[in-house]
Amino acid sequence: MTDQQRFASVWDAIEDTPQEAASMRARAALMMNLTEVIRKQGMTQAQAAALFGVTQPRVSDLMRGKVNLFSLDTLIDMAATAGMAPTVKVSAPKAAPAKRIPRRAPAHA
Image (cartoon, one colour):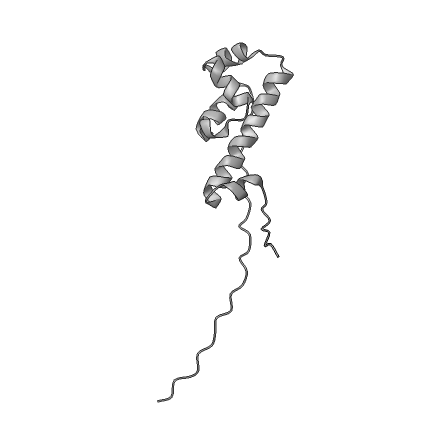
């Protein structure tokens, strides 16, 4: 029998820590939204590059989803430049399973 582990997202499965997975999720979401704006506005990669102040190959990396090449700060700057209003949503931590603490036998004096 094979043990299978379920993950909330692909990032949870491939990243080493919850922190890395959260960063990747945020960057991927920004990249998808930026790509959608570029396409909806009918911009070429060269036009998008001029808008963002980057090179056309950098926009190509963005549109190809090369998440590891972009920092969260860079993507937020690009989104704001595109007229988007990036926000941060923070959820309450998931409740950890309750751990039972074994009772110790009373010490006899």
